[in-house]
Image (cartoon, rainbow, N blue to C red):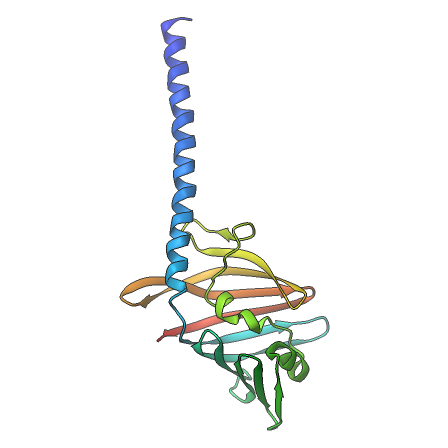
Length: 206
C-alpha cells in the first residue's frame, strides 16, 4: 500500500470513529437531558393551567376552554366552558371519588373519574394519569420518543383497557424554583377514533 493510500485509509478510519463517537455522545446527552427534565417535572405537584380544548369523536366534534387546578398529584379540579365562556361542567377528583356539576346544575358522583366524565359528557379522556401526561412526563424507555433537547415528543400508555397515543408537538419555557423548565404548549391524545387536542395558553406553577 502506498503512503498516499495508507494516509487516506487512516483519515477515513478516524472520520468514521469520530462520527460514531459523536453520535454516541449525542444520544447520551439527550438521555441525560431527559433524566434531568424528569427530575424537575416530578417536583411539580401543584399548578394551574388554562387553554382551549377540541374533541373529535366518531360522530361528534366539540370545542371549548378549560382550566385545570392541580392541588396535589391526586387531587384536582377541572372547569370546561364554551368558547364564549358559558359553563359546561365542573369536575373535582380525588382518590376513589369524583364529583361533577353540569351546565344545567345536575350533580353526579362516582368512584372513578373517567367513568363519570364519560357518563355525563360522553368524552373519553385518561384523567387518572392527568398529572403525568399534562406535564409531558412518562417513564417508559421502550415507548418514549424524545426530541433533540431531551423532551418527550410521543409515547403510548394503557389505561382502563384503552391504549392511548400521546403527542406533544410544542413546548413553552417557564420558571420553577429559579430554573427554566419546558412544559407542553400543545398536547394531542388519541385513542381509536377519538382525538383530544389541548392548546395551553398559560401554566402557573405553585
